[in-house]
Length: 312
Image (cartoon, rainbow, N blue to C red; front, side):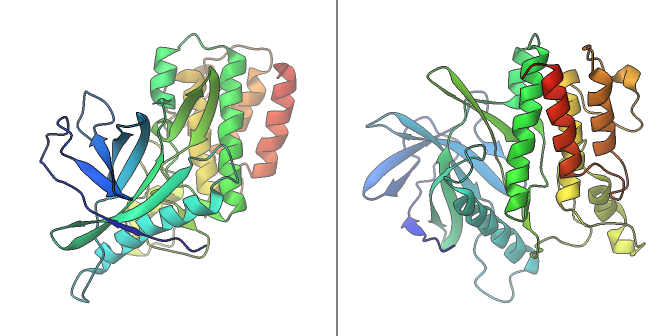
C-alpha cells in the first residue's frame, strides 16, 4: 500500500510543553503538542516518543508518535540508523494496511515528516487511548473472571488479525494493550507496532534485544544472548514468539504479575471450576520449544471451551 508524507514543521522549545509553543502545522492549521500525562513530559521508547496532540478549535485529542531516527542521507551514515528509520516506516505501513479492517488494532489518522536541523524525522498521528491494560487492572483489581477472560479473548483475536496479515507484533505487554472509552462502551486495542516484523522482512541487528525484559520469548532471549556466537539456537522471533508473550499476558491479566521460569498450577491464583483448563492453556503457550508450544488453533479450542464454562 502506498502512503504519502506531509511536509510540516515543528517548533522545538526544550521541555516546555505547556505554553502552546510546540506544534505541528497541517493544512495551515496548528495542532499543539502536550505531554501524554502531567506526571511526565513524554513517552519515550527506544525508537520513538509519543505525545498528546490537540486541535484547540475542536479540543479533539489525538496521539502523535515521532521517530527518534532521521532519514539517512549519505552512505557514511550507519546501517543501524537506516534500519531504525525503516522500522518506523514499516510500522506506518502496517497501520495503513490494517486501518478500518480490524477494529481491535490502533487506527492511524495520517503521517508526515518533521524537519529538525535539516534532518527528516517521520511521525504519525493516531487515535488516543484513555488508559492501558496495566493501569486499568491495577485500578480495577476487583474485576470479575468473565471480564478478565474477555480481555484475553479480545487481545488474542487482535494478534491473530495481525498474523493474518503476516505481521508479527513482538512487543506484547500490558502497556501496549490500550483502552478506548466512548459513550460508556469499552474497546480494547493492540497498539505500539514499533517492533513489528513482516514475514519476509528483517530490520533486526545481530544480537539485538527485541522486546521488553520480563516478556521476551525464549527465541528473543536467544537472539540477544547467543546469536553473535552462532550457537545454532532458535533466534527467529515470529508468530509463535507472539504466542509466548500472549501466554505471559494472559497470566498477568489474572494474577497481576509476569510468570518467570517454571510455573505451577498452585501459583495460578484464579478460582473457578475450570481454572485447570486455563492454566493448561497458558502453560502450553509458555513452552520453551516452538515445536510443542500452543498454536493459534489450540488457543481457539481452549478459549471456546472456557467461554462456555464462564457463560460468555
